[in-house]
Length: 148
Image (cartoon, rainbow, N blue to C red; front, side, top):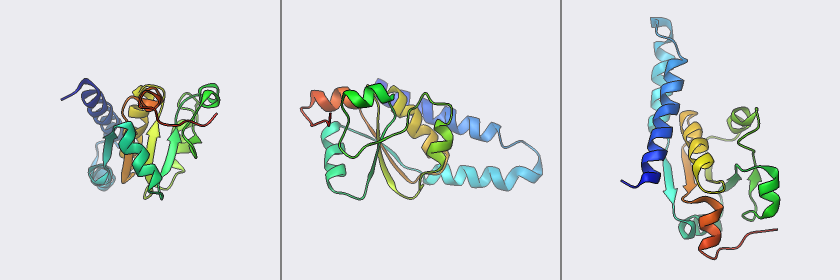
């Protein structure tokens, strides 16, 4: 298993552990624990090479999320990307306001922030989340276009 996939799996398991820990342990919270585990189990996180991510985006009906800072976004971003800064205190709230049934392609600079973001999304029950392997650095390295 690649180092990147291990990191993604570790982030996902950490997010799931945090969700489970926050649900409490008495019998009155058992249904919530079960629902959270069921939602996380039906979530699908896929690590995509940049060319595969571009093909998915070109196919339409997918939301593109850039989880970098505004300054990074201004340096160049994937066309149509919505900026949600990972470092902002309301990041989790903003992610939680998104439609969990839509499909998403998420990226950052190199893949670290996006792997944490997709783990959070999976823990919140998002059903189709794709992480760009290597972030915008890999995207540009593959010769794919960015918007100024």
